[in-house]
Length: 256
Length: 209
Image (cartoon, rainbow over all chains, first blue to last red; front, top):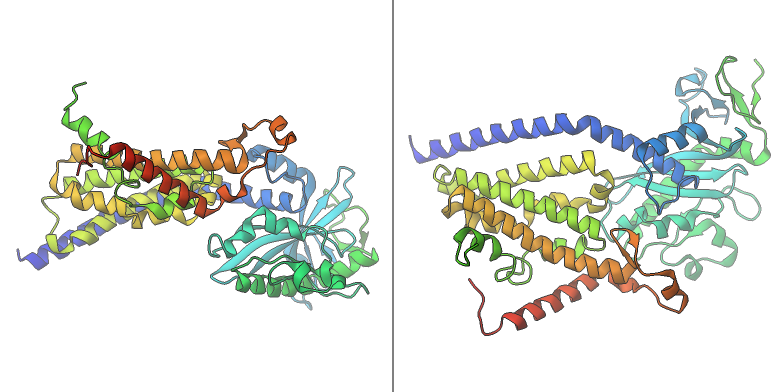
């Protein structure tokens, strides 16, 4: 056998063995990994509304328990009407958007949570943005998946960056929707005092990540604006099956 | 055990006299990145030890069959297979730690220590010795990582393995955590000091090369 043929045969055999091993590893670990991802998302939803302390550890059972007690996964259509599921939108309208409601112990709405999926510098950024029931104040922001540069744009997953969002407004002082933006550098150095409530501190060395996040948040908040308006004016509307097991309180069922 | 036991020698040499980080200056990048907390450092050290010892073992098993012209590619395939298996395992059972380690588990593939041991030891020694050599190098790497992480976590956040050890009363009288310790340059300085210390201690006896 010539040397070249030997090399090729050896390489092929090695590739085969390695791929079998990798396939096996991937198949064996998949269920546990998916479970972890699910728990992690639930944890981030709870973190966004402040039901979980980001500094402490929680078991997956505890997370599931808190989640099923306080969080309701629903949908919202283009008019801001809350639906039971994504399939509930009327045919004349565009597709519904997913929404999570955080309920307090009296089953009343405490906050609503928008899933965030937006472009970052190197890949997509996934997270959650929680808004208080006044429809204007941000309750919390979390990121659970991204591919930004560790140490620069990657700081978006850290607490110091995320906690800046709490208490910021998505409306300006005359109650007009303006979204929330990531400033370049410290917000107090770059924007005027009256706009300060619409800006969070940026990350130095990660201007582009901040810009993409600003753009993404603006797009997403605009999509959900009909719902936010309803929250601001306190005229929530729902379209649910009458036998829905857990109805949302404070939400008038739409007249048929 | 006898002092000149060759297997023990192979295991101990990379821990002190020929330490991959302090003496050979390899794997510095990951040592800066994952040593903010003891937990991540320990997991990284274990992952690294697993990868370097197993890949050295396999490469040494095949050392007479590997065609010389594709030697490096073969080594890399073996190493990356182990790295991916480790990464998948961590994602399944140590999800939070694996999230914190982010890309650095995957980057074990490019860690010069693994490649270096395969090239300089596994290709010319029998499998059991290569395995021991890998364990030694992993332990040497891990020892430095854990020492650096110990200093950084203790001074930087007053904790060890996430448990508060600096008492509240000390904070009350004005003690503050050194935030600088949480930044990468701190690890650079600590490793620098460790290298200096070790070189001073071994001066005159020479490094066992």
